[in-house]
Length: 399
Ligand code: SAH
Image (cartoon, rainbow, N blue to C red; front, side):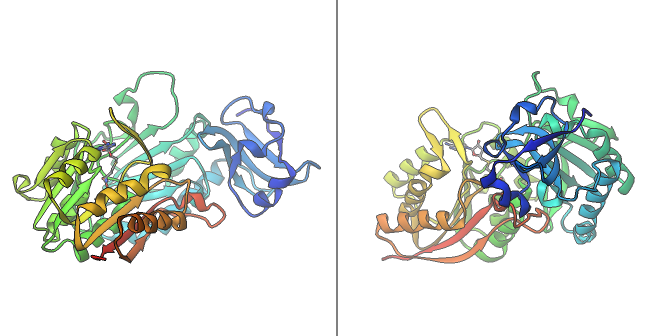
């Protein structure tokens, strides 16, 4: 690792960093030209060279890297990584002990003290995600820490930064024994087929665990459920297991059809009793509205940004309209589960979209429950953007 340089923080950002803000914001740095090689260690100081923190240089969409410690005497070495990783694993002890859930997050970036790095656990397989070339420079430390503190079947990795080359599947395997995928993990007793060597997504978004459980245990019984942006149909499977009369899954991606069939099948459910549509959600809403098709429950979980042939969707601009389309085909007294993982706005803003959408459709509503990230997705109060997940269950009334 290269020599440590000092980055100077603009005056107006100093308090933010004193209060533990972990991300090196581009606009906060005075001398960014000092940044040379990703992975280099940095000292952060105010304009008078007073110490603020130590971190590393790694470009991610939002910044130049992450602060790792506010303690001037703490070194960033193997010991540092050992401590953070073993502490994180300890915090997940109850997850490791729970036989009904065998997939969860064991290390959540800045929430566990190292921004740019996440580690997920899938029944003995660990999946490390590197969010920058910079954090990837610490690969040896991370691997050693993980190998020292835990038993595993295999370790895989995802590089979520531009590697300059084509995506190579083989790159994903790091050490241990290769799995035969899909492996079947469990979540609250439900089977989920997981692939850790098929690109960035594994088949399940672990952060929605509590939402899936709520749908199964409290909302699905006897309901006709529409699951939009359904991906591998995880919400549909939980709804079906919770006694939904029928589920309809809609996703644009061709892969969603075989993947959804697979998730139904590994739970012994007859997928033919459900609808799985490979289709643009916006088109589906128009179609359903014209045909007078309605649902008792609609799940909305769009990506923050999406582009299809006819449509660009951005959560910040278009969520309200998406809600209106859903409201139009939800039965009175039906429920909409509205979810967003967009970190650019918080719960209050999200609720204002909900309020506005109901206002514009002339319907009344009540918020039944709210969710944010589950416990294994540790966050810190100094970095509220890290708590990106917002899910609201809304009951629609007739007037
Ligand atoms: N709700 C899912 C995750 C959604 S991921 C779950 O909990 O597992 C986002 C999905 O939206 C992707 O599968 C993508 O194919 C799909 N998607 C993006 N734009 C779409 C559109 N216009 N219509 C339908 N699906 C879309």
